Image 1 (cartoon, one colour):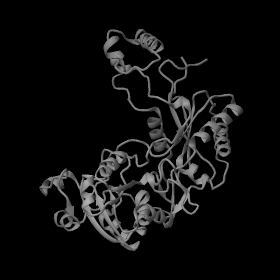
Image 2 (cartoon, helix red, strand yellow):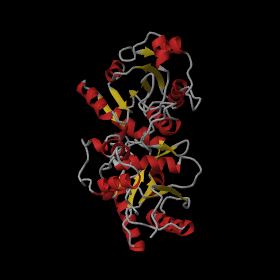
Image 3 (cartoon, helix red, strand yellow):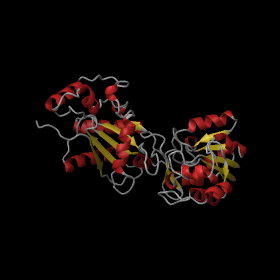
Image 4 (tube, helix red, strand yellow):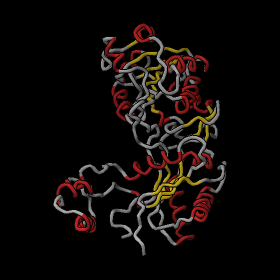
Length: 399
């Protein structure tokens, strides 16, 4: 057999346009097998089949209206003055949620973090903050003070002034709007005791701090965490992971992903005889070095995955071995030495072993989800399924 010369391959798989009620598992498996035949690649053990969360939620019909959001907010916070703190700056992710929240209140005090939101979308640059003599760790700015110091600031990529945009959304929903800028949660309690914590990855700490002060606080994960008037919901994440569907509806993060990935794995085994790992993915987890945006606006990268994707990579750093342990070797002798080191590496974690220094110490699902997000894109590629081969290969595989 000839030596395999290709390592990891990530393929976007074209699929039908999925609709509510479709048998997603069946269609995904059929699409992968059809792609395998048309592109002449063989299904192998430990391949990875990945499905974007969007089509999972769509097939589940996991949608809700802004009226459903408003009803839940009003029931939980009373419908008078509410504080909405630390949302991300996003037309797709948050603006429509804000419409629903504001519709469930008479007044909204919107508290924005600065100079940027939680995932790196910038209202301001740190240079602007420094030039103004402002300390973002302690100073609280009113909207008037913000405009006096910084004027209008449009987002680098979207061209939107989110301060004006969010303020108008609140007013159009029928609520009075007040906007402040602060980076410590307790500041909102000077305005209202009823608060929605809109941060994603720091939400538990924010809620703990405010509840210790006696606030009536809920996170976005506690809005639509159960059906409202027959709406969609997500018991674990509520509105977190939401995307805009129409001007009046949102698509929620999918539910029940674990049974789905297990079913797809079983179907692939039945049809091919191979054990393929399966995961549902949303946002990847990576940072844009220019715009400073950290991509992860979902609460997790993967809400469901098969057991073989648990854990972190257990890899040796080839250049470390070549430059240190085997620095005197070259050619075939070097190749054989590195091959032997890989074959004899311990199966348990290499954490703390210098030979693994520089390998990526992140969970497999986060790494693979990032690869999938970059492969499938978010536009018109039409590849909501990604099929990855060779991810668990190493230098010795196929020799």
